[in-house]
Image 1 (cartoon, rainbow, N blue to C red):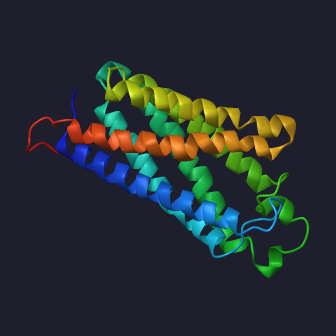
Image 2: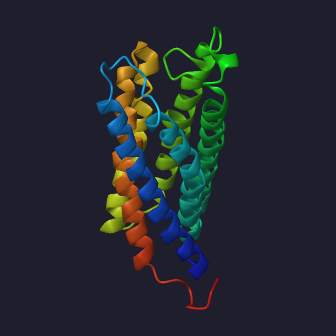
Length: 219
C-alpha cells in the first residue's frame, strides 16, 4: 500500500470536517423538526437556510474523504475506490447545485407561484425532491457499496466495511418512498447517510490516524 503523508493529512482533515458538519446538520435538522407544529409543515428559517448551507459546505470535504480512501486503498482494489470517488463526486455536483439554487432562488417572489413550487420545493412530488433522491439514495449508496470492499481487513477495517454496506443499503432502501409515493419511507435512507455515515467517517479518521505514511517526508 502506498499512502503518503499528504494523503494522510487529507484523510484526517476531511474526516474531522465531515464529522463536524454532519453533526451540525443533524442538530439543526432536529431543532427544525422540533419547532414544527405539525409533521406536514416544512422547516422554516433560520434552520432551513442553515441546512442548505451546511450541505453545500459539506460536499467538497466528503469528496476529499473519498479521495483519501482511494489513496489508502490497496492497488488491486483501487478500481472500486475510484468508482466510489466518482459516485461521491456525482452526489456533490447534483446536491450542491440543487441546494444552491433553492437557497438563492427558491424563496424569491418570482418563484412564489405555480408551477415553480413543483420544481423548487422539498414537498413530494417536486423536481427538486426527485433530484435530491437521485443524489442521496442512488449516488451516495453506490459510493458506499463501492468503497466497502476496499477495507478488507479485520478489526477496525471490518467495522468500517460493515457500516459502509449498512449505510449504502439503508440509502437504497429509502427509494421505497418513491415506489410507495410515501416519503415517510425515505427516513430509512436518512438513517443511512446521517447517523450511520457519521460513525463511518469517525472510524475512517481513526484508521487514517493509525496508518503510518510511506516515509515521514513523503508527500
